[in-house]
Image (cartoon, rainbow, N blue to C red; front, side):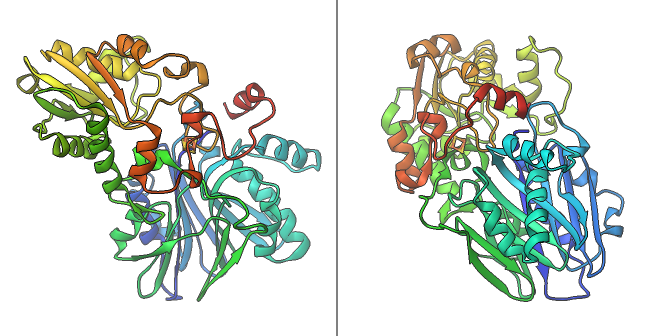
Length: 466
Ligand code: SF4
């Protein structure tokens, strides 16, 4: 499965306290990272309890579902799968009972070699109940832990076998273990209130419970959290360069988050400014494709002096799971999500700012909607440079041949989308806007150069992920 997910782990020093509610609030703040399933596991000193289900956080935990979730430590997960297997068996946290107790895991990322690891584990007689990477990690951990009885050591050992991206929160009996892969591909932050320690995919999760961000979890770091926080390193930590995902800044993270010391809102404002510097055009108004391109459009407007306007209104109640009228009826499905404001568009020359163009089908339908509403000229400006190659680290975009920029030049794409002009931000400018040096960013989907080895047989791998 290819997942983009959000994870939370929390530990309260108040031994009689209940942590489930704080995890619930934090998951609510991370809802943008996954809307297909949600779940929480807690441990109360004797018993591990888990509640998970399909749907939004508020649906899964409606009607007092906290009742069974007792204890002062726990983990949570929101999941977004994009390849069809949206099944309860694949929802997280993933729980397992073994001879020394219970383990529950929540994972954000993608283990590239999970197919081989799974085959190996199956050949040893281990049985799988899901198709997730988390279950692979769970089996590896239990195997190592059963041999040496030390969870940190077990994690250090299995890290040598894992290739790919993984931010993990693991609840094993009384301990909360937090792990970030050696390249730090997925974000993970550490926050605190007076008596709660929390880790979360994004710092916005802390704001809601009144916690302060302390720092980012370091790439290659393992934290053992109970009454105190102990930090350990994976073998070879620091030998591998960091490789933070650029797409978190461009699109995925919330603009009010701070990732690896960089304010996402500021990055997106700078992307808008840089788009004007690279692709300025004479126009009447700057408009975003809501919501993810709003900040970049504000940046473009400020830099250009052109007024900022809203030409499209997003229906925020259309979830990912709504029933498409039909695969062909793109325009209707786009209009269900985005409706034009004719009075803002009629006779106008528009700069339309979008965060990214992946397949191009949605952009094309949007352009159609804007034309029909009377836009005179449409100049599309895209904050993410052309995506030419798939992501193997947990952001499911499309296969290479589905990516519009994989084999087409900008002029051809401009024609296909039906815009008057098209301008993508350059890779160099994007790196400058993010403010992290080039060698410490993953730009694999933009360049085809990835920070890890890729699966030997991509086709077999893609079939396995589906
Ligand atoms: S390949 Fe692209 S989307 Fe995937 S982790 Fe790298 S930068 Fe992010």
